[in-house]
Amino acid sequence: MSTGIKVRNNESIDSALKRFRRAVQDEGILRDIKKHEFYEKPSERKKKLKNQK
Image (tube, rainbow, N blue to C red; front, side, top):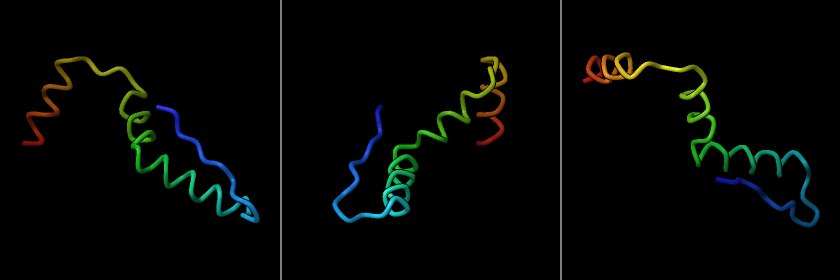
């Protein structure tokens, strides 16, 4: 799960950073990090899934 981009010729750092952020968002890396930021007991996870339905 390695996300990387190569800076093109005559490409500004801003546009390369924008492409990188878009690639990270498309792969869902930040969403996954936030999901695993804190430990959640399996019973709490089940309750949360049950309440969403």
